[in-house]
Amino acid sequence: RRRATGWLTLEQSRKLVLLGEREPAASQVPLVGVWVTGEASLDSPYVWAATARFSRLAAPAVTKAGPGGAFLLLVYQTPPAGEPAPPPALYEVAPAQAAHPAAAHTLYGVSMAVPLPPPPPRSDGAD
Image (cartoon, rainbow, N blue to C red; front, side, top):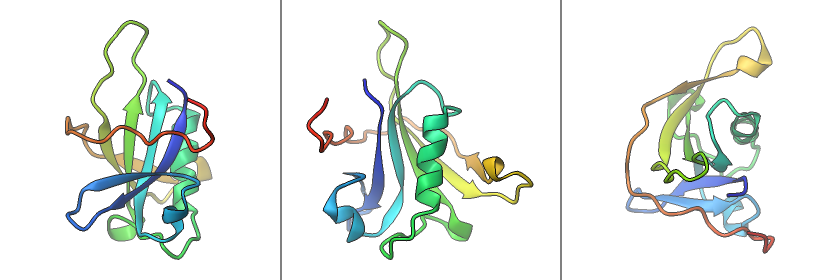
């Protein structure tokens, strides 16, 4: 599976909706987090970069999911070859007071097995 990221929003019934990074709707709805697919672990630089991009969004539609700037991270991890894909994991990411900018966020939460939609198809036509 290829790596991809996008934004999370909530519909009126409070269900998560996945948006691609370049979808026009992303600038018109409140965003509550970021989703990532195609990585094997949370400590990947790709996952870190996706959360850093979200935390620095200046779009007026961005609303943080929790107090103190916390937001959601939905991860579709890539399993080792030949193994079934694990269920998506949902985390809360909270800003932390850190001496080093690379450690500016702390990951809280627990992995939950919940039925979630698959990531949207890539808007650039590549799959």
